[in-house]
Image (cartoon, rainbow, N blue to C red; front, side, top):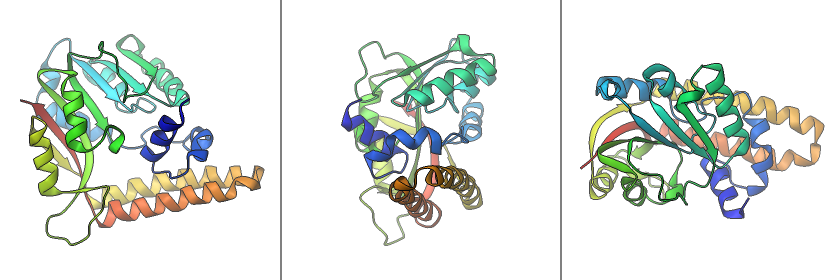
Length: 258
């Protein structure tokens, strides 16, 4: 796999060193939902009645293990197409689809979401579930995927913003005002949103960290020479969790193409 996509995968999972890539499937083996909440996304879809449409198609970019795609197929009968650069994740996505009886509604494949062919178009809904700036800024990302949507199609964007009334700044995150400006400049309106409760974020972060820490410690016992790289990943998880819990408002947007 190309070095640049390896770096993108690692960074999207809050890592910093591309040498971590081969160990990610082991570290994340106990987790199905790695980023976005399927319950939140399903709730937004119900609330805005997207589940009432027939022959509904979904493109899940950076789909991971299918934690969003499979419930969309199982609960609503949507036809979903998931793409992820991690072969081990795609394998698990197919397994989850089989276990949930929706493999006939799912298509999962290994691929680079930055280099989609012309066949990827005409979707009713595109999922951007905590993939970070893989495709550029929020505006750049939305402008790219707008071409893959049908008229009046929707995007689920799971992200976080810095409240306008705080002084903390980051190159990685936008202010609330700038977030909305970039969404609008890309040709979308916010049809709905769900802000994550602080206690929910903390609980989720704790569960994910504990699962990763357990596997990291197991791996270090077998391969002590890997301690530095795995400890760096644990440290990066702690730093990211502190930002998510203390500096950002975490939100899932339902955006509509205009």
